[in-house]
Each structure stands twice: as C-alpha cells, then as structure tokens.
Length: 410
Image (cartoon, rainbow, N blue to C red; front, side):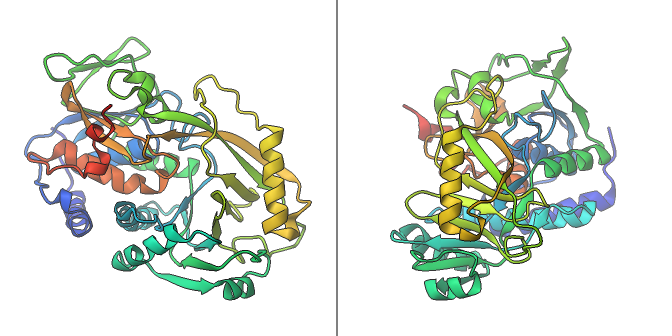
C-alpha cells in the first residue's frame, strides 16, 4: 500500500474541514482505513479535479482521457472561462463558486502557476432585472464582495462601454477569468506529481454486472479493474451511457470570437476593463485581454446540436456578423476591429442546466458527473471535492436534489 505523506494527510483534513462550512453534505467525511483504487474517465474540469481530490484523500487513482486535458474537442478546452458568483436565484452555484475560488487560489499558489485573473465581473442590467435582483441577497449571504452601480456610475467608470440602455450594474470584485486549457494541464501536472496515473486512451462501453462495475475496457485492448469508477465524460456522457443518460446531456455548437484592439489602445485590455456579462434581450459576455489573445465575445444562447467528435469547427458568417454588430453597439471604439481568432466549442447541456452528479443506477460503485451546461468550468475544484467525498465516504450524506438523476426522469 502506498504511504500517504503526513503533510498531505493534514492538508487534506484541513481542506475538508473548510469545505464542511460551505457544503453541509460533506459532513459525513471520515478518513479511509484501506486504500481504494478509483478510475476516473475524463480529464476535463470535472474529471481532472475529481482525480486530484481522490488522490489527496489517499486513493490510488487512474485518470483516463481519449485526447488529453483541455484538448480541442473538449468542453474544457479553449483559452479562458469566466468565474462569477451571480446566479440569479440558484444559490447553490453561488456557494459553489465561493468554495471553488478558494480552491483555485490555493492550488495556484501551490503550483506557482497563474490560472486566475481577478479583474472583476460587470453585470450590465437593462429592462428585466429579476435575475440580478434575485442574486443580490445570495451574494451577500455567501460573503461575495460586490458593488451595485447605477447606469450613470457604470458609464462614468467605463466610458469605453456604451451604457445608453444600462439601468444599473453589479460589479463582482473577486470575479474574473480562468485560463482553461492551461488549467486542465496544470491539474494533470499536479496529479502526476502527487503520484497519480494517467492513460491517454478511450474507454469501451461500461458493462455493470450484479449491481456493480468491475472492469473497464480501453481502446488499446487493456482493461482496468477498480473499486470505484467516475465518468466525467463531458459531451460524450450521453453516447457512452445511452440508457441512463441519453439525451439528458445534449451537446450544442457554440462560437467564440477574439477581436484585435487598436494599436497602443489600453481601454480594452484587462487592466482597464473587467469581464462583462450583458443580460439584456439575450446573454452575451466577453473577456478583455485573454492573456493577449484578443477581446473575446460569445453568445450564451444555446446553439444547434453538435457532434463533439466529428463536427467541423468552422465559425459561420452569420454568427460572426452578429458578434460584429454587437461589438459596434456596446463597444463603439471596436466597431471596425479585426477578427484575430475564433473557435467552435460546445456546451454539454442538461435540460434544466443543473449538473448531473449521481450513482449509475445499475452500478453502486460508478458515478456519472456532467451536465456542465456552459457554466461548469469554474466549479471544477468544488465539484471534484464533492465527488471525491461521495466516492470515498463510508456513509455519504444525501446529494442535493438539483444534481440527482431522478429529477430528469420522464
């Protein structure tokens, strides 16, 4: 049995104690007395962090991914993701963001790698403000630092934004953005450095027997036997588990654009402008800077169905035109900005945009984790912590109903 260094054990116990104050469902945590082998399939935001938390709690962990962490097909790929705590009335995600941010900061320090850019998040509110109004007491209760700004104050503070229709705004001081692909790589590096095992292979269909899953086949003909399995397979979760998940996870095509700012003009860089979320007729958001990739714009509206394996990732002229029109309206100084990069990614949506975190109904030792629905990346550290507790606790408490498969029963 591999010995667990005392320092790592004490750090894990301290982290678990902190988590209990945020997530009461983790109160059942007890130290393992026997090392277990857990296989985690999927090295994206959910799977990578789950593997790392399992390892730090003393399990022997094998992480498997078909193409690698943050690869171009993955929902966790690409340059950047927003981290924000405003979630309308869905307080569970506000609390998860607070816990996840603490874990992002902790591991950034541990690895000495820049992953979190605390430039703030600005929510622009036009006519319907019910979402933002519902968020305010939840932000306060969770201890999130924020300001309420009038439309006039928003325009004064950020003259590069056309605030003509902006009634008021929320500014989250600790919000900002995370590097996506490089963060997935950092998690894998940390996992390997702490003794984890990684294999870049695809999985064969899982076949539970007698209420459990015992062996997983891999694309090279090998097999993996384990005590427990976690499947965090992103947009492939429905295809890999058609009877249990099926269309409860639906990949949609999402287009992202990066525009070039004028030479020497710092108004549209992350030193002068926060992440912004424009919750008007639709929901369009953007990130300045992106570690010099350009001024990012994306529409959160769900796109058409998409095949994440074989789908061509070429942006459409229509979506680019819509992005340009929006840019000219909201950021007039970038009206004629050139497109410098673009990419097609995908969301992996659940019907209600809540995560799916639950046992496989035919295998008590297998967990299904997915349904990130376009907002899951930021929560990766907190999701990993939660799942590790569910897998390893002798008497795990009940899951929050928002995450259970039963809510999606026909």
